[in-house]
Every structure is written in structure tokens, then in C-alpha cells.
Image (cartoon, rainbow, N blue to C red; front, side):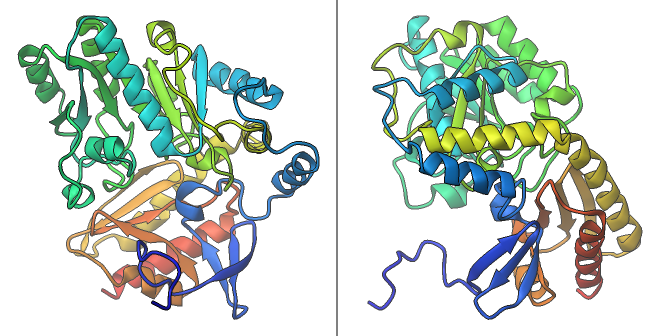
Length: 388
């Protein structure tokens, strides 16, 4: 066996050795415009000076102690993020999947505390919540499930953006303890629900004494035009998770709760060895402060709208284009057929992106993207689509 790395990602076509802003350089000196930002992670761009300075300073001071002891950086970040989110308290993990695991456990324990012997969560078709056994079960994708049966019990599926189906579940299943949903389906194809969708789910949760759990692992941290996507509505969840853009490449995830959900966990109910350590939380604090102080969420909203308008103008009348949609710098161009070669063709043109749900070209560029870089991404994508 020649490759010491497990074959979970296939063979990489390029290896990067340096980054700056929205640009990456490979080991042959070729430069690429990054319209994927590490799958919505590097929100402040590569080699961000503030992040680099924070890593250096904190690594020279204290990296890890464990959660057996107080971590001042963690407490400060929790105060910052719960204030932004309208939540009461937080649990720190190392990834979005782990943050969602915490949210699932909160909801199950909440149901058990109410006397439900086998509490269940409603989850949505087309969703993606992670690759641990619980979060892959919650994920609404047969591809993700395949080969890992038996799946975890306690999840009931409903179509995304279909409130009536959730009402039917409410009428027929007394074991429901909550709803887990993404405000925008990310891996599922950048699908935007109706404006009243979250509000109606919130009302159902209130009527049935359920928890509303929002997975903002990808949509959070300024990507959709507000710090969290739900802040574009009047809805406040009981639990919200995020990760990805929170650490700008430093592994960190957070599960925040309010009200009755914030009181569910007690000592021994959950834990993490690395979660929220001094280094990760110092970096995340720098990221959050930069997003807020530089108004990068607002910038993402405005620039994303201009990018979608430019793509629509360029691709008007192109038959293979079904729809161009998105929120902020979370953009999807849906084609009428799978486009498995599109990623490689864009890479040849010096632009990094990906295709999700087989036929949706997905753009997740850094929030620090310049106007000229945004136009370059749109023009390369449009040219390649027109050539299909």
C-alpha cells in the first residue's frame, strides 16, 4: 500500500502550499482564485494577519488545559457569541458534526425529562448535519447513509420547506421532542425556503412544546448577510449550532441554547477534551470581532446579490441553467443535468469551486472577496456553463 492516507477523499488533483486573501498557490507555483474557501471555512481569507498574529501570540502563551479548568478565552467567546445569537449559554466542540451531536443530545434529554421514553427529532430531506453515526442519520441523503446501517433510531423525516408534512407528523407521533433544520440547505443544493418557513416551524414547536434547533454550521458567521441566517427573520431558535467560518481554519464548533434548552445539560451529560481550548477560542474571538467590526456580513449580503445578478445577466437564455439562487456569499447555479467535470474545468481556469447535489455549482468565497475577484469568479463560471 503506497498511500498512508485512507482513501476517503479520492486522489487530490492539486496540493497547495501558500495562501493569501482569496488566492491559493500550489506546489508548482500556480495561483488559483478560491471560490470555496475550504468549504465555507476560511471566511477571512488565507493567511489573515489578525488570525496569524493571534495564533502566534496564543501558541506562545497557552494552547491547552482541558475543560477540567477555567478557560478565560472560552468564557469571553461564549459571552460574545451568545450575545450576538440571543442565546443564554454555550458548549464548545471541535467541528460542526460535534456541535450538532450536542444539539441532538440536548433535544433527546429534553424529551426524556418530559417523560418521552423514545424521543425523536424531525429532520429534513436533503439536509446535511455531519458524518458521525447520529449526524449522518439525521442527514437527509441516502448516499451518506449507505453502508453504515443500522442507522440510529429517533429521527423522523419530512420534506424540506413543507410545513404541512411537519404538521402531519405532529398529529401522529407523540414522541417528537424537536425539529432540526438548516435555514438554507447547503450540501443539499443551496435551497432557500419560503420566507415564513422558519416562523411556522417556530409556531409548531411552541404549540407542541418542542425545541427548534437550527444548524448554522455553514450559514453562520456572516455568510448569508447577517451573522446568523435566522436573523433575517423574526425567529429565535431554542438551540443553534455553528462551526466552519468560526475558526477561519482552526477546528472549533459551538452549540448554543436558551431558555429551557439551556438548562438541560448538567455535569457529566456531555464533554469534550479539546473543545473550546485557549488556542481555538482566541482565534475564533479574532474572527468574530473582525466579522462584526469590518461589517463583513453586510458586505457578504451586498456582494452576493451583485454576483447573482451578474450570473443571471450572463446566463440569461442558457437552456441548461435551471436556477441561480442563494443568500449572501452562499450561491448555487443549478443545471438541468449532472456536471461531474465542472470542478476540474474551473480549476483549469484558475478558479476553485465545487458541485453539490450532482448538478448545483456552489460558490462559497471568502467574505473578504474584492469586487474584481467576485467578477472574475462569475465570468469564469458563466463562460464554462455557456460551453456545456
